[in-house]
Image (cartoon, rainbow, N blue to C red; front, side, top):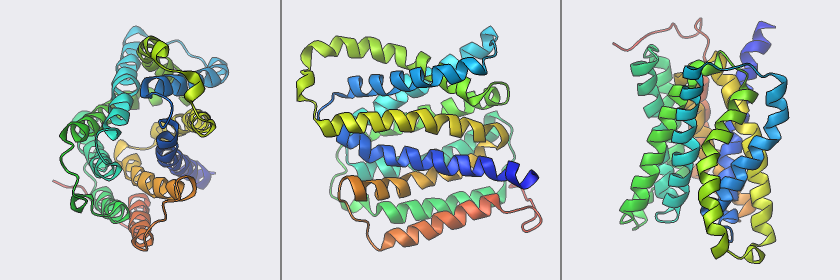
Length: 299
């Protein structure tokens, strides 16, 4: 029973990060004929509606301060971070964006120590660095691509990384008090309201008939991934430290490459498998039992 209780959050993190990674090529397909604000607003609003019956079944009233914390995290992530990264991807290369996003686990590692008073665990730091190396191998060398002039796009992605990391730090204490279905439903609803309002002003300039079947299918797939990924992540975050969950975000580029292989016919290079090995090693070190590696802290 104890082993199962320990493995379930790990499994939830793996699935959540794979779903986030697969969403990357799906978003590229969807945005080919659906405007960014309409795509994002529809994606998260429909996901919130799907989660609403589940959220009602486990509903617990929130205090004013708790609702304020949830609203702040939702605005930082859904309202600001998601549009920033989508807009950034239209102005810079996917490789550049991927490299910048790799700062997320490192940033979470530092913020968790500063604001959540988590200990600096040496094994977690080593695991993050190994997984970071693996992700860099998978993505390749974008600094050799000749396209490093998209400063605006790079800055937007960097801003998105920071906002998303802060949102996770804010939401962490709430995961111990409320069910992951309730948190995700409210998170989406609050964060998407400003996007729905803005998207409604863009409808007059967009002809829905121009949206392709592939884009609609990609949007539907993103709704499904969003409905499942965040509840799984918050379920795991309830019992794990932010440091521990951060290393799993290096599964995103792995899943993105595999998804692009099937959806966009972008075949991975042989170095992809070396990168997978590094990521697996990093995750293993983070999850290594204390009896195999005595807990140490960085001073």
